[in-house]
Length: 216
Ligand code: DX5
Ligand code: ZN
Image (tube, rainbow, N blue to C red; front, top):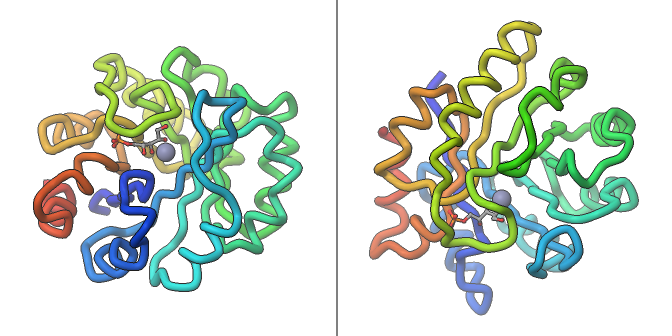
């Protein structure tokens, strides 16, 4: 299977979201990556349900929702209702991660777990068979446009090993500072899904940039 591209709408134009949504609908993007930040888990606030619902009314592709919030359990049903297809929580934000994963799956969404740059892949050992996605942060979450952390390649390789050792079907997604320079190495290391925000929306031709990332 070829890798998937999930452009992050965080770097889009919030005063003209419909333009970006239509561009993504027409592009080679596989998923819409939606970053929800609460100002507590991360030092930034992005947007919540009304924006997600509005995006959902116009998108033709799966919504890949990345929750950078504390206590995600409180909102799982509401994210389903707002249109999330894949719901990813941070391991660092969940005291009872197994319970949270089961609750996401009960709502018929794919369940993802994200790891901050400092969190060891081994933390996933006892949950890897239950999840559909591992989201490896290649920057500290909170902002678009940050510098890619080089240790990510090794982390992807370790995740790939863990997945294979346990016969898990989880996909590996990488998020933060992804561009055309590091994309080939990320795929070679074992990434299945590449998130890209500023690299796509900051380029002269976002649709062509998505195509280039897809053709890596
Ligand atoms: C960061 C977010 C990312 C962000 C990526 O906290 O999770 O999805 O939008 O943006 P870039 O690609 O610009 O690093
Ligand atoms: Zn993200």
